[in-house]
Length: 169
Image 1 (cartoon, rainbow, N blue to C red):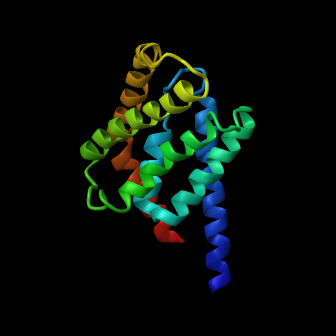
Image 2: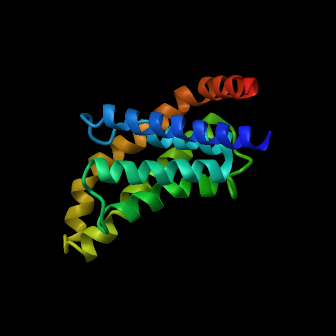
């Protein structure tokens, strides 16, 4: 029985990581509009910290290799920015299940994720921080809006569907 559970977990993590990766690649033609934060919020709430952390880790590695951005300038900050979602949703925000509150958290996650890139751009690439912030504001607004709206509209029905699918297995 234990080996079946382990195989089930590997298959589940693989499928969900694939879904996360593919949706992000399909939406790359629209800057900062994606479902990534929504999906990681859903996975965090439904799968917990360990499985979601594995999904995020594999996703970040795949995405970094696929986009040729693997390196100190992007990869650690993408990882930190996305890992804060399962870390906080399984600890300090564990009791929050309301889609509106989760949507507001999606805005916060988006802003923190965007601001993390200020570190390598200012200290490694020597970009003027004020210019970086000013030029990034429209992209932050897009990311925060897409995160909020996707969580607001999709979280509850997808959460229910996720529960039904997981019940069968």
